[in-house]
Image (tube, rainbow, N blue to C red; front, side, top):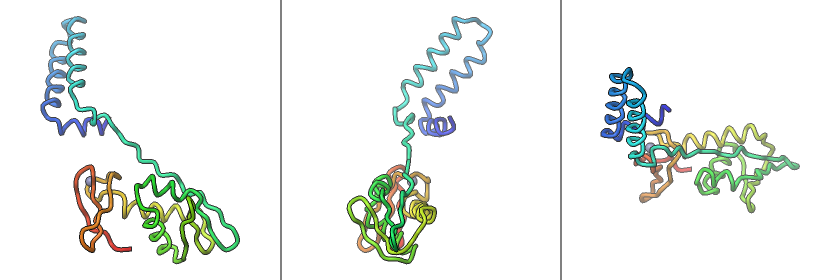
Amino acid sequence: MYSFFNKIVYNESIFYQIIRIKFIKSTIIQSGEDIMEKYEDLLTRAIDQLPPEIFETKRFVVPRAYSDIQGNRTFIKNFKEISESLNRDPQHVLKFLLRELGTAGNIEGSRAIMQGKFTHYLINERIDEYIEKFVYCQECNRPDTQIIREGRIFILKCSACGAKAPLKTL
Ligand SMILES: [Zn+2]
């Protein structure tokens, strides 16, 4: 409900229309059911006029890393799936992970293979860090972003609010 009204504020005319209808309601509430029906009607019509995007709440779901230690290597079995859910190049995600964990590794099919033994707790913690730095918009905090390149600089561009922020090179 909070985000619904938060978004409605941007559509001022309809927002005030709804406020006005609510005000009419409070002044005519004793006048009987007829008027209540009219009120419901007006409210429904006002809500119908709102652009559909207002009601859309895209869910941002990132699968947890499903990893397995074999010998002296750690396999992240759903690595491709994780990268796709973040809308990021798997190589970029891996580069960050390898740097953070101080190891070497590569991608093989849908899996990431890393030298060394790492718990999935540790891996997920680092992926959360990646999301914080390379996915969420620093202005509006939404995850609808992409990484673009301007010259030699990589930029995090937000599709929701349009903000741009330079990124550190990995
Ligand atoms: Zn933004």
